[in-house]
Image (tube, rainbow, N blue to C red; front, side):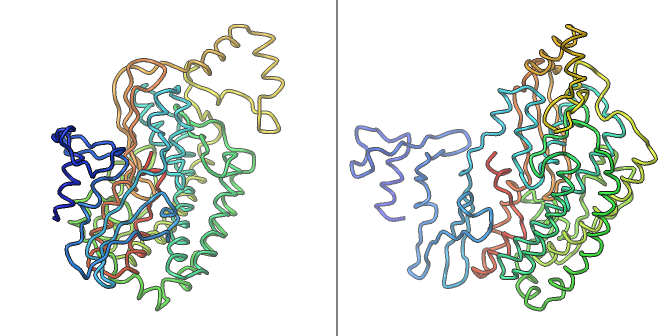
Length: 462
């Protein structure tokens, strides 16, 4: 390390006497501080020059991107290059500042759904599901069977949409523009169906503590079956367009290699782990909701490269279509029923009758609560404004999201608001694999590796 960088490193440490600090340092730079976890640097990023100091004249440090939708300013990739070879890579995150977890502490338990759904915004229903499962554990309530099967249906539909974005953006980054247009064409089918079922294309806030916001609209079975028919007819096109395409295979095969021991050491899950040969899927190995009543396979591969991760996502779309088909059949057999727990101190707003415009309550409902029962009006007002009390304790609930294990750790002190909500987001953990996949490869291979990770920065910087 040079004398200059040593002086710079000393000037930002807490042990240095401010009266004798290096006068050449920036007088407006805030100092770092020492903690039990190590040195914490300020937003000025004072450690980057030291961390990535180039000791060889034939190496350069660059900021790479934007090439992936996640790197358009919310993910910074710092690469040290020797020619076209990546000798060191670092992922720098922390640019979205959504503050989702902190915001949940200032809202009721039900309102928290509207925040967590915006974390991993490509799979919002999984965020809602994990959050509500944690709250339901604390409450000690059991969700009605109809609501559980509808949750499975929505989760698998959401998984298909998320994987289609991964295929589409991966194709876009590698120059396969037809793959991009095809992927987003199919995703539109997913979003149209989600809008019909839940009222919104994204950030639904449809899964609520205790069940669902409301039941499915009339004719939803036919809409789902039409979607299954369309997807089953179009999926083989991806094999003809990409899987067997020589250029596509050359760009992905043997690239971004990360074996199973590396995945486990770095905490990777989802398609990254399964592409390395470990058939770990929470739906199978730690069943939640009613997944133990469904018949499906967990696709795996052993190549542990970018091409294997691509194949995993295509195979998982096929399995999700099978689960959706079973869900429609099971719901038909189950018949009509409640979609929210039968507890008036928790159940809202599922018990409200939605108006024909979908925006408010029916006149009959308003007339009843305002004209016939003052107690109902008071109870409704307090439940919506103050929320329900959750017994003190803590709970951890995990689901298998399109990117791996997504979990919520909820802490309650017995009040109407969470003390702490922490999201274990798979994008955040999986991004640790980027250096292991990229170092020693070419610059072009970094793009393929990041695409195969499929990170969503809303989940990373939550």
